[in-house]
Image 1 (cartoon, rainbow, N blue to C red):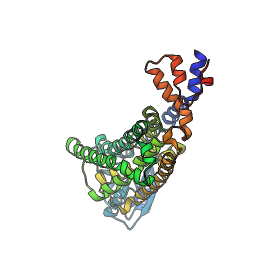
Image 2 (image 1 turned 180 degrees about the vertical axis):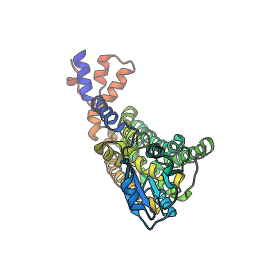
Image 3 (image 1 turned 90 degrees about the vertical axis):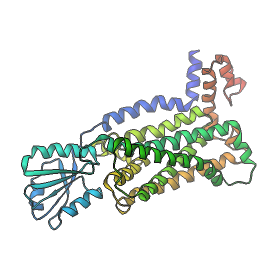
Image 4 (image 1 turned 45 degrees about the horizontal axis):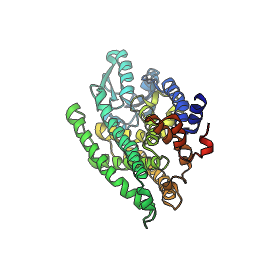
Length: 378
């Protein structure tokens, strides 16, 4: 019995990967990423005494911009464009320190350091004056909801069609794979868009989160981001034969985006290697867009890189999903249960699910799809 269970576990590569990868993932995340303290705050110093003040600031403030000819309006623009987190305006008594409250953890560290400087500095927190956590979390949660719908819900919905045999019917119809994908994701796209509107409105009404930016800028970023996560959902469905497999794979995609996108732990506080993982996640860039648009009223020009990266991700993900989907629709492809790479190995998972549902152990062995009678014999 023990040997049989080990054999089934080895055949179920996804469960085996979760048993090995998840502990390592948690160790890396909580070892290197779980840190709320920001040790370096990107800083600008402007005004006639900019050079002198920049050399006297505490080590927390990492001065990246020093412009003696700029004034307070230029400093506010640097914060709105997310170029820096703090901007000192010299030439006034007392000196003014502008803090970007939308970057909550950097702002909290900066305000604590500025309070130690006494009356020589007047602190003015912009975009989130009370440093409310809800103001920062609601825009990020909108992206998390879109990610959940795009990956888990979409992949499960498509896998259920595979289980119902609908893909076999599509295989004999003269329809391009890209057309099939477009038709299948359109309802999810519209529903996710509706959810986004509802969550955004509730966030504004219930938590008083401001919406200072352009609605079109926000909607464009959300639409591109939705294409990325929906593409991930389709891609997951092409490598999964059951809803259970789809959920397991989607968790691999969803969990890093929650923990490493900067919505919980600040990217600036993470170790360099873990931070670069965050830069590869689409939720990282949608969070930049949503927080920038809602809280700072940032323009499309100042966040153009986030839109471009999301667009590139959408193209790459949809190309991969289309290629996988085309193979499934091809005669003898994955839709018949024998052509998919993962089908052969992951059918064991389906058998496992049957066993868990009360099927006798011996019956579970024989129920493993793709397992010959010789293999199922003890």
